[in-house]
Image (cartoon, rainbow, N blue to C red):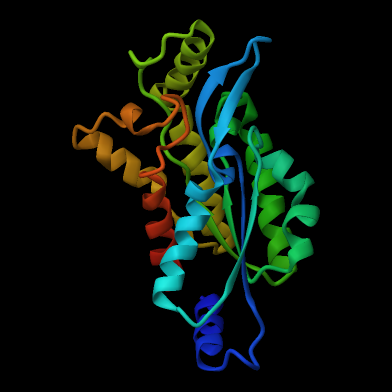
Amino acid sequence: MRLVQKLMAKAGDNWNQPPVTIAFLGDSVTQGCFEVYQKEDGRVATFFDKNSAYHQYVARILTLLYPEVPVNMINAGISGSNAPHGLERLERDVLAHHPDLTVVCFGLNDAMAGPDGLQNYTNALEAIFLRLQEADCEIIFMTPNMMATQVSCHLSNDMLRSIAQSASRTQNEGIMDVYMNTAKSLCMRLDIPVCDCYARWKTLQHHGVNVTELLANKINHPTREMNWLFAGSLVETILS
């Protein structure tokens, strides 16, 4: 990737080379959301921990590999966001910062719309990719984690159990698989690298791992530890 050449150039001549900027466009997982709870007014709220968001882990790895290079990280993740919403705010939240690379990660909220939402998801993703390419920004599409495959015994709140039931139905009925396969086909057509973390979660499940227990909210937010999987996979993709 051109980003690697920029990192190398900056490491060799920090005085004269321009800064390196990476943007992350996504949903609550990108923003750094973990546990959820129901407020007194009945609304569902999320616990935010931006220091454990995966982009922070990417920054730590890059600092280890390129200690001389300051890398600007733009977190454009918003809880509840989906691909159409990401497209609406692309100029404001990402392109205004002129990133060298944008990591795009959508699918969790999109897939909850079921098969009927697939075309909107695909159209929005394609528009995001084309606009980034037009701006000469490198792109990585990162597939998200799996959602819950069962209603966890750790959830006692009726509303949260209901949300978990919907999420597990979306996962178990193969809707997430269809969304991810469609997104990867789009990336192949547009020659966009894919960091396939979803496939890694599927591999864990295949080998008997209870992936629901790897979710901080037991619905769709990975634990802080599992965000290292995203970070390591992203750096591997960047350097490949």
